[in-house]
Image 1 (spheres, rainbow, N blue to C red):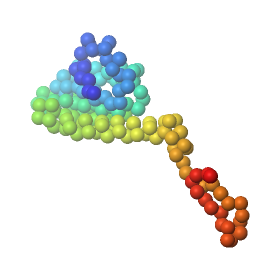
Image 2 (spheres, rainbow, N blue to C red; image 1 turned 180 degrees about the horizontal axis):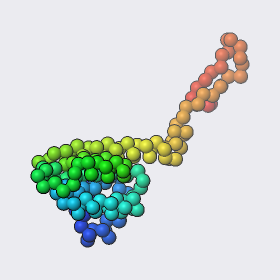
Image 3 (cartoon, one colour; image 1 turned 90 degrees about the vertical axis):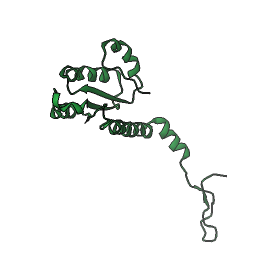
Image 4 (cartoon, rainbow, N blue to C red; image 1 turned 60 degrees about the horizontal axis):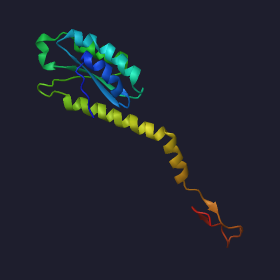
Length: 155
């Protein structure tokens, strides 16, 4: 599921419930409106408070088609993303520039994070130990004629 809160205050109380179980987040600001960029820190705090530390996060500067009225530079977006350990990309919902790529990057990171969690989970480790093949010596004699018989199952 994808939830778009559009940065609206009325969603702040509701969103904390949706953060639980979230595996990815795109924090989007409008490159032509500085106030939206200035709110990024608050949304990051919300995510850090309510989400797992492995949530894949990306900072997205939207409306890159409005270069002539840009209020937030690319370097500012990159710097903030780097400081916060986020992926960064500029997009345009109007002409679809980088929209698909942004989602694909986050989805790849989500897949990596979920796979890593599964591989490190106790359930997965328990399954590995149950399914591990072990060789059992079924023969008591060590003569050349009666070499030990090994199998994966004891008799």
